[in-house]
Amino acid sequence: MAIPAISAFWAGLVGLLGLVLAINVVRLRQKFQVGIGDGGHGELARAVRVFGNFAEYAPFCLVLLALLEMTGAAHWLIHVGGVALVVGRAAHAWGLAGTSGASAGRVTGMTLTWLVMLAASVLLVWTMRGTVI
Image (tube, rainbow, N blue to C red; front, top):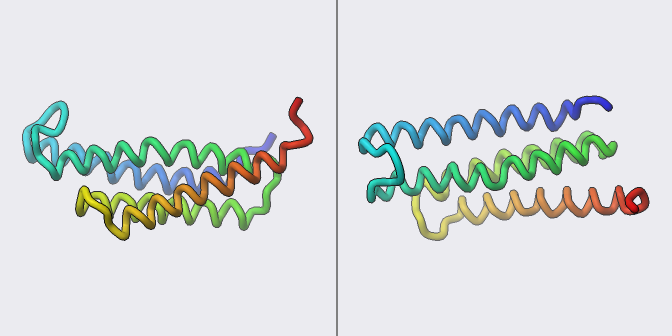
């Protein structure tokens, strides 16, 4: 089976975003001299949560996109999912980094991420419905 090249491209971009978020956590840990936890620093707590939320959703969505691509979904569909995922995760990170309360970035980010999850999941179930036992 061929490598899902389009999903791999988007995974690379998502990986770069994850690296930026991880570097931000390390930068703040050094700034506040905190090795474990957040040391009571709200800015560090938010950065840890931003990365944590990213790590919870991004890999799952990338697996769904790769599987969708491997089932023969249209290339444009994988690209739309990739764009939505990158924009969604970046918007969520930006929104949560600024405030621990509700924000337009957080709402936009979660909405886009959940739409990727929903669309890819439904399409996978629909596509594979006749092939499972």
